[in-house]
View (tube, rainbow over the protein chains, first blue to last red):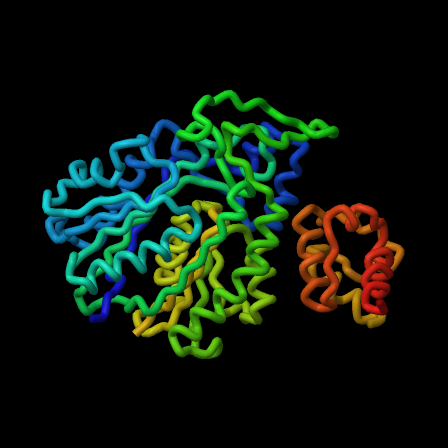
Length: 334
Length: 78
């Protein structure tokens, strides 16, 4: 049975963090210079809103924009690493808040940048196995709440967002092809929020600065070793793309568009060149929302559709990679 | 391997407006677009193109573009 993505919507919180504002708070960061490299000029900040709030807004946006009755949904997957509570699962709360039927399955998936592709694969499996006809796949994170105000390596990059995708047995939309996955927990410490969960419960992290008085880390906040993440991406994404093309019996030339996790422009350019993808077939969407972890791919897909860069007849390769380490890719197209 | 073929590959990792000014004597850390990401891109390019691995500590000892080139070419000869 073919399984399709039949609709995508997204929702960004209203509060905007501009380069100008970052520059006011941190004049030494040379944010304009950084922006040329990252491709990011604005990020959205959830502020008082929680992940569940953002997820709710994205789902409502999907229902309204595509005239989808909430009753149609028989499974909700929420991809997030910033849930509202340790327990219960935020997806259960969303079932109630969105007015979905009680026979609806609901679960959270705790993945970051690879999460959307993983969840497409899971949703497809649920539909193919007959467990669900229509899966509501939501990605939502409020990562900005975990950033340290002096962290030059994360503040300019990350933003908050939520997206909602309808994965359905209905034969309209764009078909989800074969997915491939990967993980390597050896890289766990290179992108991590160490304190606050059950292993290191006390929030007793202290601010650590280097010899030049530059902020390094606080274990209560998100820590990212940019160099290691770059190395991971440069060495793992090219073989990931090779593998997903083989699994879908496609050559690189047959692909109309590549939509990768929008980490930052410089790193995307680097892997694009390394794989040998021409710029016209590679989609970028970073400037106005930044790196929104598992939401970057569905936001980019939606924008690619709006800009007529892809249609239901296009062959599109998706690839997500990052925290875990975790990575996944799939092909969309009929 | 010669410097004339190495330089364009090095330059490709930069986001400089004027690449014509870059030579073997250029102190690359003083370039306006240089940062840790650029260093990583250069190290990865060298691994891909020349099969020479450079760790971050060794890379820190290089001052000019020629220092990088000399290190890579000496490793290839070995």
